[in-house]
Image (cartoon, rainbow, N blue to C red; front, side, top):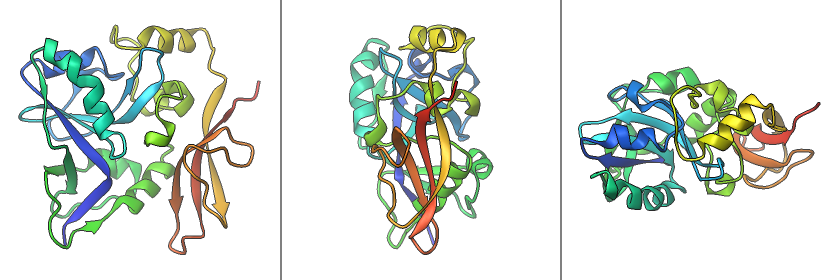
Length: 236
């Protein structure tokens, strides 16, 4: 049975200059991207707040960005005007991710090693593996943000620097000055933390208990318990 990751969508930036173009927008070093393998990455706004987190990979057409499905259209809209000046284009429609034959994701490490096929239409009878992948990402403390958390936090507040999504030596990119200043001046006063929950599930984008904002939520088989990643005030 085909497995589709419905919570994620792929935005393709096509053109021979796609790698160089995205070097000025993504937090990772695009020169180190590999074909078909997902590398952690984030896209920030001019204030250094993460618009979308996810992964990037080389593709035959250029570069594929894997982001939350609720943010895919926003990412495409955000990048399109800049891409035109670099002789790049954004592929439409946005694509879905299908696990390659024999693929299975039960941990963050497996996700990094997993190959996906990018498809424009969902195969008939496909199984949604989003819940399993979300659980793997939460266990790995990887903040895969949705629209509810977009443009609210610096990469360090989401722990993306510790997950290999931020390269502090690559040079300039949109929001880089603020991200670097926060890093080297120790100005980050919020951090991502993992919690367990029972009963009513926390809602992404909302405060929960003593947290400032929930980023992502996983559920166990009962649906009445699970884990949550949330941003909290760092203790001094």
